[in-house]
Length: 123
Image 1 (cartoon, one colour):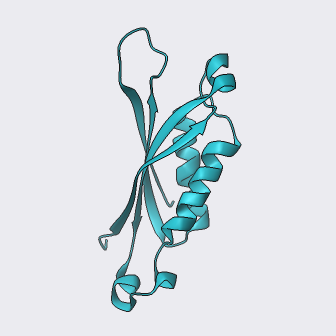
Image 2 (spheres, one colour):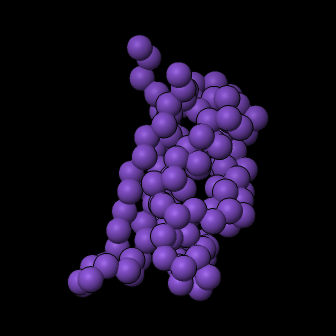
């Protein structure tokens, strides 16, 4: 199998309404997202042409839409939706790794953040 190149978007921050508790669904909170796009960038590297790569401005716009337009109970489901949305929209992407962090998650203890990592690939 040919190795894939990676485009990474680090620490995209959104205010959204995800969580299992009613306060989280009503008051909202901050979510931080890292996204890895595994794809063959050979054509882009050789041509230096935006049309030959994955346009990360469009990737960001899609990610923002997924994060802000629907409420999820679980950040696992949110991360999965982001990965599936990217794969269905950008044919060059073969696999995604989505990290969703929820700072200040409601746990009975002191914690900085909760993070899930979901990998999604083409069948």
